[in-house]
Image (cartoon, one colour):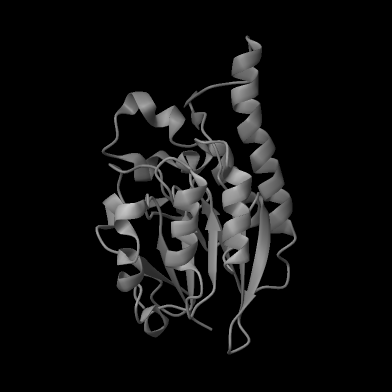
Length: 246
């Protein structure tokens, strides 16, 4: 069965956007079966901005699943924002997984969370030296280990998607300064998808990156940051003869 996955990240909503993004989502059910949000929903991670996100994306006619991004953590209100979104019917992934059952009986598994940085094979940080560096890389490793577990648990689904804010590959970072690649993602995130299996990996964060990439293991990667897409959301197909066309 074909599943149409709509996705966008880095919408960075504030008071000036209230009601305006919702307008762009009108009729989304005609184009997609589910909407996935790849983090950085707010500008400064304030509860007030979180309420706007809940208003804009809550109560849509398709299921909505999200992760938080680094901006959503800025004001130390990420738990409050997550609870607001949960209350609005938006499922927030916290390094775990959820299963969406569609009307035709197709089951979509979505696993992931915010993710984190560290860099990519051959040009990455390591858990060596100062405790601060060990903590930086160790945080990403712990996240990836939780994603391994979450994906393993999705053993009764038709398709699997990994949803993240940070990137699993440098492919989709092309256009960003090379110096900041380690702060945009980590190869450890790709290892989870490649080891456990996924049909699609969605992320944001890299505003000046490119849309399409692939993990070393062959999983399709799409950077759905709003500045990259240039539209309210993109739609990707799972299943069917042409995965690039819905």
